[in-house]
Image 1 (tube, rainbow, N blue to C red):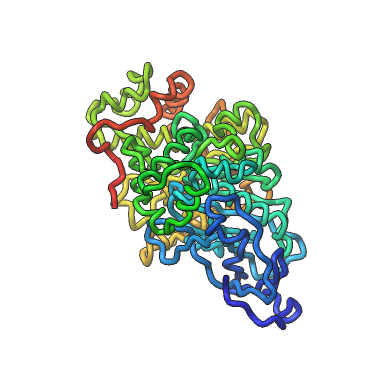
Image 2 (cartoon, rainbow, N blue to C red):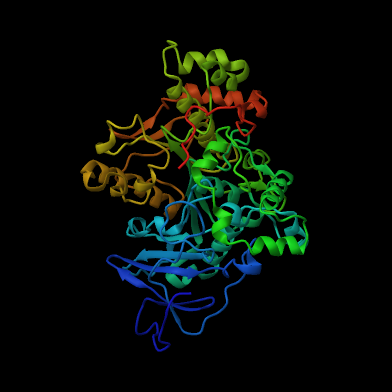
Length: 530
């Protein structure tokens, strides 16, 4: 736990001293923003608490210094500071105090559920615009999504397997109980996330355990899961159990009793994350070999009862405003070794697919794989979410992020997966560095201000910006963030997305999904191993 200040520090002497559950904390003013970093929201998930639902924090006596990020969760990626003791969150708010409580934006990072961390996403750029921003860590990989049968015997009344999702719920519950102490409004909370973070938002929107914890949602390039169950299926609990048992067996640990669980908990955390990098997971999602011991999101029957698509079809989702979209050159987790194999994903609509994606028959296979599988996994499901919400009578806004930083336009054909994040957080220099231009900053201001307006009112519109109309399933228009500015109107990808809509409705899920045994060789466009 962080170093403590002297007990004599008080709110009267320092406005950065805040009393929350567990004790008193002290933050730091950073220019126009006040920040509290490294606040514990659950007990360290170590020792006997490894693979358990998050537990309450142990109260502290003195003032806890919260002016620096705490470690991110264990992973193999290039993150400077990681630890199994990682359940901490961060709060950012504008330094100028207001009498009216501030809307709250709670960020869920992505990373294929095996990488990422709250420290990678500074909240200052959004907080300066009049909202309170919360970022938090959740467990990843084999430490966050693991369903060994011994766990059911130890804690039969707890949800099992999706510990990372349980951490997210614990953070949201902490926000509901504590955010008013920072000047935030617990009745105006927007949850937003990208990639696996966007998929996490979908899980929380449709989980019976998350009801009432947030009031609006922003879903950016959702994955693991998506809004289309067939595009990226949830793992069934029985399959996740086998993955865990096989992994334990490879470590020399057999059985499903307390001794087996004790042995698993004695394995160093560094060993448990070895070989589980995001490239390996993305390769698996593209039809490559399974990553041992990594189950990902699973249908556990308690937290995740059904796929988000099934929940929305039955009207069991949270009844809240939703903002949904993807990038125009998004993540393409899929494979094909020939064009014929690629067209097979479309089933009886393969002839139509050829005409739309490769009308002259001259397109490069790699470019086709990118377009086809990005549409399948990210782009069409983001529109499907907007359609489902609209038909349920909920306000929905559909977007596409097509902007490429000026210095990179000769290097990439469109906006790759996750490049919208630097603009979401009003930090375009994260992409362009010292080549960041006025146009880049202007786009960051435009996109982030739409997001902030949505967090404030449930409607992304405010004076001075192009009007963003709610989604209309008949017109299927899109708000497009392009290199030439923001445009609202006909979707340039509509015909392709309409085709995929037909595929999802009429084609067996086994044909659409690539989570199946891969044929020998390397899939086209599969991520390279590091």
